[in-house]
Amino acid sequence: MFFLAFHDQTVVMGLEQDWTTFQDQLPRLLPQHRDQFVLWRDASPIGFFADYDSAYGAGLNRFGPDAEFLVARVAPPEPQSISIAWQAGVMFGPVR
Image (cartoon, rainbow, N blue to C red; front, side, top):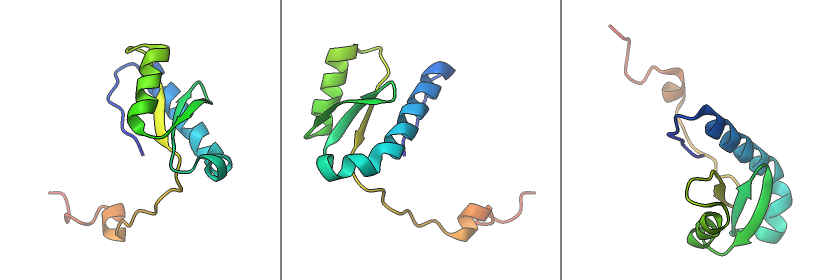
């Protein structure tokens, strides 16, 4: 999961689309690129790297510091345990 703090809705929508496309293609990427980091832009992988810093640096070099791009680890999703109370909003009791 990733969190964004951009005010430009176009940037947010582009990165959300890239994240969705990456997640959709993850099963195809895993056999060859497991545990590598992918540089992703415009719904396509740009390159694969051994570590995050290398992928991020390649993105900065190729697109510049003001560009939007995604760096993600190619790894199976890890299940997250969240209690039903948290999901249902009953953890803190009624709002008064």
